[in-house]
Image (tube, rainbow, N blue to C red; front, side):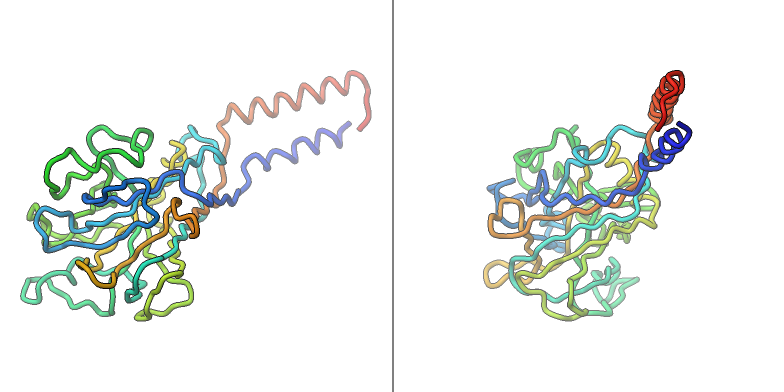
Length: 307
């Protein structure tokens, strides 16, 4: 009898063990670009910048990707109940060639050479960036869909997209679509907190990234703002991420910027999200579980049953 109760207690840690979970297909992915005529149904999503184009966000082509985590991870708990150990997003590049840059570039490298604070970019290429997702016009992760309007209508304008790349500046969540000094609103530039910078598996800085190349994002959980965003996401039951870059766009010719496969690409690889998390149940759950075990133990003991 005693051994049975000891065995029961030994199972308690299983309620809060780390659980590596893979979401192999997004529940939502969409190219967030004002001239995307097929939102939610394209087989690829492009990321590029337009830092010197009035009327456009500096991070112009953005890739929104989202996962319903509630199918595998209990939602609705307090954020501190989600002890996240690692989060990894893997995407597949399927477009033209571009130069691999595995490190973030400061906004100062985008200034004109004569501007105060200008710094030359120390390496070739531009980074592929990962951020969270913010919403406007009353939309939330629960109401925004692949066919939701890009913005309020009318000609495109900076800072008006309905879902945008969300980063942090001094602990405050902000739209980072226009974080350069050349922002359309004339604001001073800043370097937002990045969730991650994409790494090209098997390549070195300066190499050429071609179609079929995996791009892996290891999210920066050491940053408290990034961790807080992800914990809140698991509590909400939805993990939304936005991929951006400031590669130069081109009209015609071979693209020289990232292009990622979406879930509509029937021959490709959609984004894969891996989360390693320990979910700690609320105290009430522990109480009910232990109480049930105690009642069972008492019932067996009264009948003098042996285990």
